Structure formats: C-alpha cells, structure tokens
Image (cartoon, rainbow, N blue to C red; front, side, top):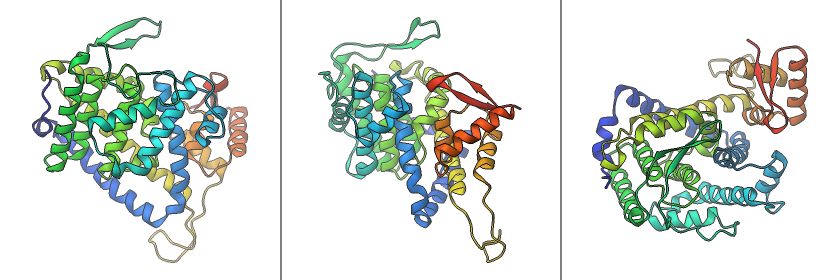
Amino acid sequence: MHQFDYACAAESLLTPHIARLLTTIHEAKGRQNVQIDMRPEAVRTLVDVARIQSTDASNRIEGIATSDRRLNALMLKTVTPRNRDEEEIAGYRDVLALIHDNHDYIPLTPNVILQLHRDLFRHTPLAFGGRFKDSDNVIVERSTDGTQTVRFAPPSALMTPELITRACDAFNEAVGNEHVDPLLAIAMFTFDFTCIHPFNDGNGRMSRLLTLLLMYRNGFEIGKYISIEHIIEQTKDTYYDALAASTRGWNDSVNDYAPFAQYLLGTILTAYREFDERIGQLITPTGAGTDGHPGTATTKPSSERRIAALFERTLSPMSKADVLAQLPDISVSTVERTLKRMLDAGEITKIGAGRATRYVSKR
C-alpha cells in the first residue's frame, strides 16, 4: 500500500530547479495581490473569462464539449442542459463557482471530496455521483488511432476510502505544521488522488478542481483570473507524460513526484505570467512617465496592433476564443475584423474549420 509522507517526500523535491520555480511563483503572487488591490475593476473581466475557459477546457480534456454559444448560455444559466455533455459541463460550472466563492469554508476531507463529486454529477441521472468507485478501474492511454493501452492500475475499490483518508490527513498535517511549501503538498496530493482514481468517472476533473481548491485555501488565487485548466489543455501531452513519469512505482511508494511537481509548478508560473501580461493590457496609464511620476502619458496600442502583437509572441495556434480570452477588453467584432484582415494580408494562417478553427502567425 502506498505511504503518504509529504514532509519526507518534499525534501527530495527541493532541487535547484524546483526551488527557483517556487521562489518565482511566490514573488509573482505578491505582485498579483498588489495589482488586485489597486485595480479591482480591471481584474473583474479576467474572472468571468477564466470561469468560462476553465469549465470548457477541463471538460474538453475528457472529450466533453458543446458549442461556444451553448457554453456561454450554460455559464449564464439561461438554458438547461440538453444532453449528457452539457449536464456534466453544468456540474463543473457549479462546483467551480462553489470553490471560487467559498474556498475558505471548504476543508480537505473525504466527505467534502464526496460532496464535490456529487455536485459534479448533480445534473445527470447517474447514480454514482458522490460515491467512491464500486469496482476496480484502470487508467488508460488513448492513441490517435483509437486504441487504448493500460497506463496504470489504481488500488482496488475496497482500499479507496482508507487511501483517500490517509492522503487528506497527510496533506493537512504537512501544510498545517508548515513542514512543506503548500505548492509542493498540493502537487503531491493531487497526483496521489489521480493515482488512487477513487471514482467510477470524473477523476480528472475532480483532480483539477481540488488543485484549485487547495491553491485558493493557501493563498494562490491565480486560477480565479487565469484558467489553469486551459493551460493544462494547451499542454495536454506534457501533462500526461508528467503523470506517467511520476506514476512508476507508486503502488510500492518508490515513485518520483518530481516530473508532475515540475509540470504543475510550471503551469502555475505560466498563469502568473499571463496575468502580468493581461493586467498590463487592460490598463491605460494616463499622465505618468516611465518612472511613475507625472510626465508624458503612455499611449495604449490600437486593438488591431495588440492582436497582431499577440500572434507575434505566441507560437501555438489560437482560436478566436483564445484571442478574446487574452484580450478581454476588445470586442468580438474587432477581433473578427482583425483576423480577417490578417488572413487577407497573409500575416496569419488558418488551421481547421468550424469550432476547431485556429490561427497561427506566419514566421
């Protein structure tokens, strides 16, 4: 049976690389707190965008999706779910909102995990919501040709309640006694949760929701403003590779948490850097010089120039929704007009069609 000792395991994780990641994240957290206190109106738009992106991305990772129009309507609760995918999207929406708004009152316990899982499936007719798995399961890897390979065999269903209890206790002890940097404890707990695979369905989504819950409870609220799930979706192959690398030897307690910890810390740091970029784009300095004293006003680039600059600094293809998410103060019509102009001018290339349409810069 796997042993949960996060204080001991954390010692081996503190390599120079991981130590630098932790230091940089803590510094970025401090900057973010200052920005939020100074400019609450500017970050409000980021919150709305992040909730939509998080709900969409975390479900799409599991092959659950709907149209952009229906997704927005579901988020606003102006429509009711019309199929299984939309029922599960609505459940994620509700649990995410609960965590965003009430995290300080949601401790990490087995009963809380069961309640969150129940709410994740509350819009579906499925009976297993809020119950640990009743049969053994496996973690499979799906190839592009549709074939499946067993990547990991989690512990049996009979062991699940005890393992979840011990993992929760280990996390709460490590963080409560300040023996471990909370970010390392979060990485180890959510990874262990994934390995236990405690539910018949919804394990991946629950692991990402629990990641947010534990981050928020420990003061790392970046996921409210920049979607962690969206970054994971964009780096899905690396995400699965990190999970696989850290899984080897887990049942015998000889696994290496480092690959997954490095991935998660890198994802969190990416989110903080995106926050810095977006908050800068949302703010137009007026009447101030570069030294912070009155002087020549800084002119904000035009919307079209900002969209072009976004493509210049982004290597991966982006959808219209991605552009809107990164530049939330620019209207849909302006983005659509600019994308068409850039396409006609040969500045970007169109990839795919319909909802899968993406654009990438010609370099």
